[in-house]
Image 1 (tube, one colour):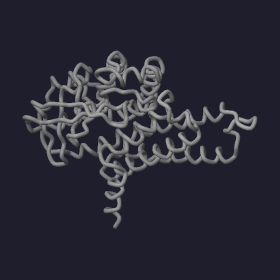
Image 2 (cartoon, helix red, strand yellow):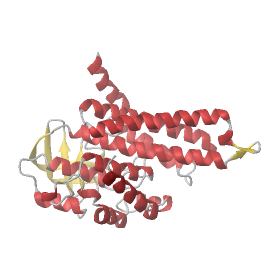
Image 3 (tube, one colour):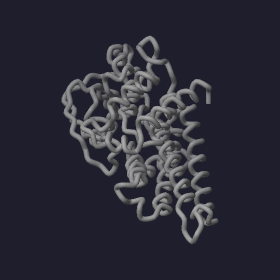
Image 4 (tube, one colour):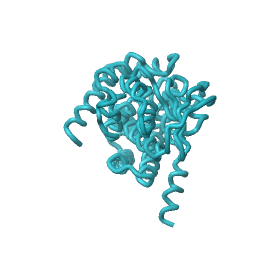
Length: 313
């Protein structure tokens, strides 16, 4: 990873540590808009998080997909609710036009407008707070000029979803496979969350004493946590490859690997934490809900597995 990208990661991590504590995340997810607007402003102004994939001549930072993936991974670690994923995808959609809407891109890059892409009109990320909504059906991209949006209550309170009802739209152009890009970025976020969930579990097993010893010292738990570490790192390698060389195949591999690793980690985390893990006061239940909610977005793991099967059969 380049020095600049490591600096980006460190800057985002510092902001998350300072402004997105577990208590702050809970306040944000319960707020009217579902995210901390002051933190969003900091991410846009100090990090340029919403400008990463937009060319410099259109008001952006001229970065790459990998830059957005790094930021989403860091936000994923803390389950930080932000409209970054949807906004980034909306920017990528607008950039496919022969003559991109410069004004809209500048507003999205500055964070003054929020965007999203609807792959399934019933479950649209940040759909109820989005100013710019793009629909993608695998064939064409369309920008909605008029629409209604209604929040959808789901299992995961840290990710705001909405149902979009289109009323009128305008053509942008051919869909270049935006769902695959979305899958890769979502996988990067999942890896961040899985890694942090594992860290929290390891820390707990060091503190929890049973039979006069920290439970993390028992050989059986050591083996289980070692297996989880391997699962997360293996999935991270697959996701990193997909970020570096995006394709329909690498996207499906990334989504399947990240979803499976995250689900495995949270399942073991609940077991190792015991009963407290499923109480509202404990954060592990939020990771559990995020894991299962994220796995169903953009198609569940079995759909991505079928895509991969079709290429080898």
